[in-house]
Image (cartoon, rainbow, N blue to C red; front, side, top):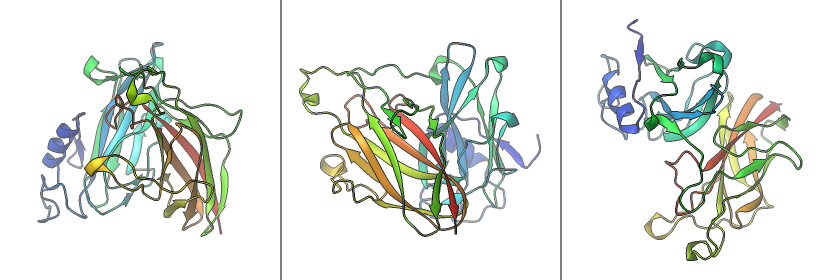
Length: 309
């Protein structure tokens, strides 16, 4: 194996950290490149992570990938190409080029055809100034097999669609909009998603006397310029998320649908012309049987945006 290619073979979060710490360049400078320092503001690499895989029952399987940007402050952009690619090449293209700080789970999926049953795919990332890292995607043992079955109190992934009568997404595997949105540099553009929680829960359970609110969050997934988000005037005033010490106000890219269904809108402003992709995640993590770490209960939606001067 070439010295400039190292493999990140850990699937679990802790394993990814250990392997990552072992592959930092020998010329790493203190203090930013200390292997086990997790709170460095800048200078550390993005770690590609396989979350697991869904068995589609027909010989094909769908791999879920996420990442860890080890920096606490530095947002990193790595364009598609020699520093950010998936092998085999015909599966390349849906991975993010923009990496927010910290850990992000289930950011995109890749469906591997039945003709490749038993084989692996690979996601490669090279953060500027660091070695090329890669992680395999495969359908392995039960511990890495994901499922979308209802959770103990009935939680499943919400349904979501871009336009009335359009195709419906309903799982972390994701749905890409048929239509491309047009936008102008510097002008706020409305992005819209429709959604509903279809979880069936015990009506006699006091925890579900009211619907469990849905969370809707937008990120730049691909694109060269910066994207900023702000609250749309059609949406209700921001309300706190969580309870007790964990309560916080939503970020600019977050909306909560209190009735667990409805239309969510956000304003996106683009800094440069070009082609972008926005990822929207709809989740029901406010339910007692659903959480960020459970890959059953959110839906990814992707929307292409063409920005002109």
